[in-house]
Image (cartoon, rainbow, N blue to C red):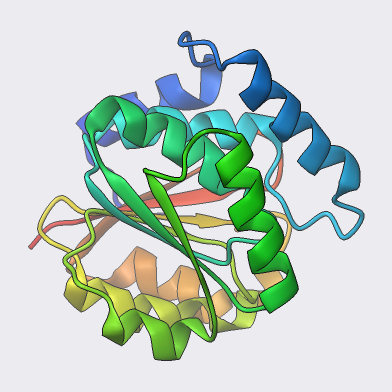
Length: 208
């Protein structure tokens, strides 16, 4: 696959992938993030490197109305929320499992980000049509075989220059061939792939 590439985006994601965020988290936020990683036996959360990448990307694109599909225990939502604290934006995080959604909401509360992040429990395919758009930043980290269906669902609800980031596009690429093919060939998108932690993230910008 040879995704088309826009130079400004390439510079931004390269910087985000290669440097750590310079704005420190509070001690409480650091503690919550560490606790989530320690208790995440299913390894559903993104890595710290990927979390920092999400934060910097949110800030660099000035995201305001954002969506996360597959919230797990709130780890990535906290990183996105830290970025949104800088932009004045809000995140809606959808988690299918009610127990995980409850834990995620509590983790976000303990991180002091409840005013920035809202957790919804339910099927994202049913919940997304109910949400007010458009979404200028979308993070996709749900069932990998559903990525193409989610792309088809959210792309019409993204504005020009909206950013879609999808997780695990390197280590689980065999499970999402149709999605990777779609983002590389769509005339509506310009895309690239970065790998802050080895798991891989695709970054796609909607052109029109």
